[in-house]
Amino acid sequence: MKLLLTGATGFLGARVTSLLAEHGHELSVLHRPQSNVASVKAYASRLIVGDVTDPIVALRAADEMDAIVHMAADLSHWHRHRERIFRTNVTGTRVVAEAAKTAGVAKIVHISTIAAVGYSPDGTPVVETAQNNFVPLRMVYHESKRLAEEEALDAARYGVDVVIVNPGVLYGPRDVTHTFGHTMLELAKGKIPGHPTGGLSVTDVDDAAAGIVSALTAARSGERYLLTGHNLTYEQVFSAQARAVGTQYRGRALSPLLMYAAARAFEFRSRFTGVEPRLTIDNAKIAPLLMWYDHSKAARELRYRPRALEDTLARMASTYREAGLL
Image (cartoon, rainbow, N blue to C red):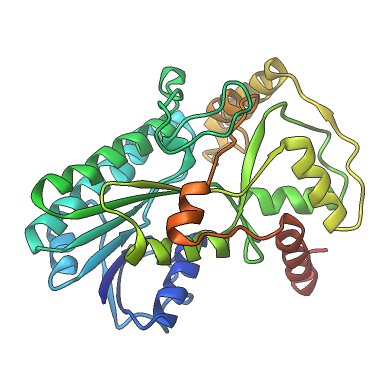
């Protein structure tokens, strides 16, 4: 198939790109001028410089494509970047969907996130059809991704097959600068004093990428698929990461009130530095929530199989040691 990829240079996108190339697809990559294309250059037959919010560029890129895998996203959780986040996540998805309709592209695989699904109020893993209970919390990233899904699905009214996939929290051996990789390195130095009281669903980036590649041909149009993994508390995740780097986690639970106060302090400092705060108020809002999900549907229809968390963390630790970070 002739595929147009957006967001191909990201942590997940780079792995999806290489897997699609291995499956014999012809790839065109739409990327911003400042993007480092080293990780995808060898796999793409065409590199197109431009922004997903540019209708002319998007339409030119979509011409003669069989499908679009839309992965581009702004991952910020900081309300100060609200306009930028919505421009990329919502407007960008609208532009890509419009380009698909106009160019006659048959399918869009829209890479969303569990942030567009909802959380578990009682610990029962959430399924694809659950009501999005994140909405009342008014979190900028979560709301942008919810609206982005609506923009993608709107293309179905014009005959485009649209599939939504929602990865969990991604870990993997190339995660040197990503938030959770950074946490793992800090745990090795004993710099993490505590953990949030909630939980998350941990997903190996390679497994999520394989699920996306499978969704391209096996997923049903109009359906959503949760590419999630192991439902664990933050304490369990931190403890597993610490073991992987040869230490023991002894942190304590951090109350929601303390998390919120810390987030306020981080955001206040970032107003002067201009650097994205490590902890935002929106991060603090989700910290006590159980973001646990049921990936049974993806397992049945996409043959999605999350690997053991210990395997993922061992690969990460090995990569960090090779890079001299541990």
